[in-house]
Length: 70
View 1 (cartoon, rainbow, N blue to C red):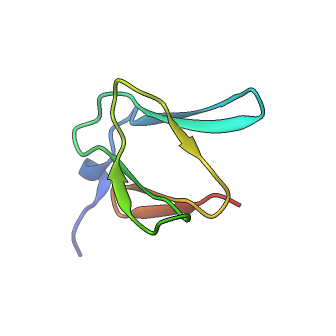
View 2 (cartoon, rainbow, N blue to C red; view 1 turned 90 degrees about the vertical axis):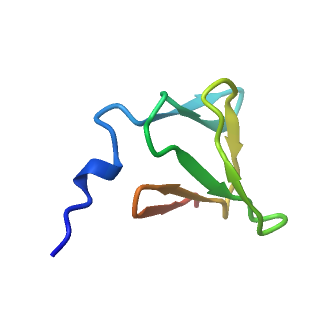
């Protein structure tokens, strides 16, 4: 069975809540974070230089893990 532990860094990302909105920020991880936006179904790479707003129904991809915003 393969090991996926190396796909996620110890400090990979952070979720911030500000002004009534959630934001995700990549902390310079090796494999990055992707977000599938509910409004257009497209998959975007999250930049380490800019916060990315997370809306209800968006899906975050971190390594082999999917997190859906409810």
